Length: 282
Image (cartoon, rainbow, N blue to C red; front, side, top):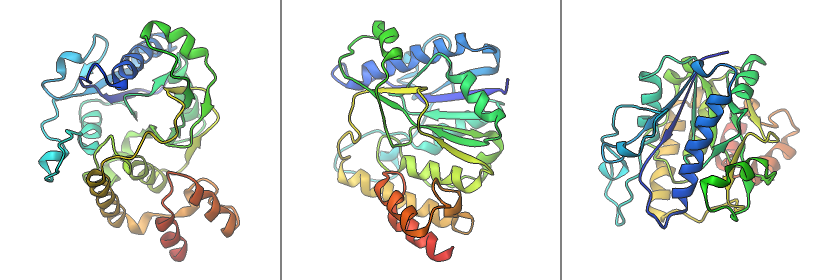
């Protein structure tokens, strides 16, 4: 089995936040999936956290070097939201592990017990980078003790990207600017890097391997100032890798032009402006 390092951003959510339960579920599901794997020793569970949040890192996870900055250190905002920078998190997975493959997922994404074995199977199929779309399950769950019930809940598909797997050697090519997590544009920034540099990227949309508590597709709009910040960072990142971007490697990239444009236009993770710019180059 290939060596895998899976990193999440562990923090202290407010007691009233839905992320409190979600994070607990994610942590327990990751520990269980590692234990359930055919080769637990090949899997490293990593946390990216601040010094203040280090106390939250549970046994079974390795706390990487503390995060020392967030988006409020890079720009002045009317409302302070201490959101980590994606590159800072991925740097820690890359620099503090020797795993062949790295995984980043949102802290509210639980995983199935066979997750790591299935990831290895996808790798063995020749995919050097891929995304696994989550299943949406009902909000009736209110305790991590209900994990067994969550795991068997079929739920519904979700179109967005929130679990990313990629070969270690690809990371040095990535252009992420200073996109922060927790705000739109994180998923399209990272996914475009995967499409750009992987030889055989893939989006898995039907697998029942990850889940999120809540049936919503959109969680509600982020504060405009943070949305605008990430939007600017996204375009900066795309400018840096512009010569390598190619819609042929996007899902449905071989469809007839009108059909693929419609597909991308309806998908939340394919900016139509970027699509038209790249299609004109194509």
